[in-house]
Image (cartoon, rainbow, N blue to C red; front, side):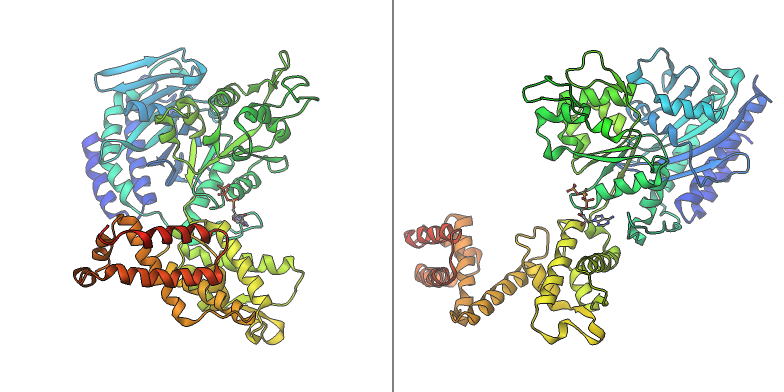
Length: 588
Ligand SMILES: Nc1ncnc2c1ncn2[C@@H]1O[C@H](COP(=O)(O)OP(=O)(O)OP(=O)(O)O)[C@@H](O)[C@H]1O
């Protein structure tokens, strides 16, 4: 089939594709036909064959889809043992062109618009394949790889399609790519918008286990992909906000990998001062620095042949970045103060961050070469607010776990209303915050004097009120709706009223109006001018009558009264601010 015929038959398939996988299969099949035609007509006819094709879709900073087809047979590859072309990403992104690799010689050809450029004798840092990658490719007889970019509508690169072929006779030659690279580029260009727009095929959900107790519909695809990544030797980069579960996911990856019998070690850079990072990573010899009274193994040695999870990788100092880069490239390191003790590192790395590493590279805080070395298999764990479908499962799991910790064997549950309350929250602290809230609601339910806490058969039931009270303790919940924040403030107030009523120091209802005074005070502070604050709050009438300063004073008096009743140390600051506001001359 000519390239034109291939395109003509590909387009209707792309149009009718229901999901990413269908579109990916169609474009890969078209590409296979294209390469096979070039192979049949070329000098390597009968000596070379195509092995596989993989579509990598990784817009921004994380993989979103991945799909492979293996030949012969053309079935979906369940165990993608050959994800290795991910290393070529850097070349494709930087040069925005197709790239061919001679695996045996580790040389590379860039198909630039002005004509191809050969790159030979590349230093290790620039090699398109890591050593392990190359070994594994050779292990499955891959001699040549061709990678085509998937361009985004904005002109960037959203992904790539990698084709692997085997032809020993062509080692050191350009194989068949010169005959078909243009047609392959055209097929990729036509397919790219479909691949970017189509949803993922519903995935066979990974079964939850003790390391990953919840896998809901919104993360099933990500987890499925991570299961594939887990079994690679390449570095996995787990991005995502704090408390989303990155460390736990790293442990799960380790459990899925062939290193599962070995150790899993964590190095959290947030808790290591910059000057000690090298020592913590590589270990030290006695006398290497002041205070090094005996030899000590670093995290790499402790992890042995297992997995080392480095959390908050963005906090790594530039000096330690250079050391880590060397370990990743050469698999060798030297403990501090040990001039002759170079050691081999056989550890698998997983790194975590909640920072934008590309931004850190741009700002010069993170080495670009290290970024590409650790960005081979990136995934982004979404915040809890983006996977609320999972929230009920997580809440049940966390509640059950808390209940078991207390040694109870009776049933425990959240009412549907309580779950709805949890789902209405914004969860800036993600799973960590959910765990805290569930624990707090559990404690409140237990200590509650209401008879509703423990139901028939000794069942402990957490209802909406327990959840509400637990949530009310969360101060400054940035991101949650205004109404939710006001509601929590009201809850805190009522709880305080309740507490004081018991100790015979009640708060009368009028003092609720102190809130009005606080709003006015805040507005005056924001605008820096009393008149403007009144306009802002729609009180022009008071302003016209020139008695707004009296109104403000009256409101502030209520706040002061409340402060006198409940005030503590921090409230003194507020008291002083109010004093200053009240003394502000009218009209200013
Ligand atoms: N797989 C899990 N099983 C049980 N609890 C979990 C799991 N994942 C997350 N959690 C809960 O969320 C909390 C935070 O998880 P984790 O430490 O993995 O998040 P993180 O994204 O690494 O956070 P940070 O970026 O702050 O280090 C845990 O302490 C636990 O309460």
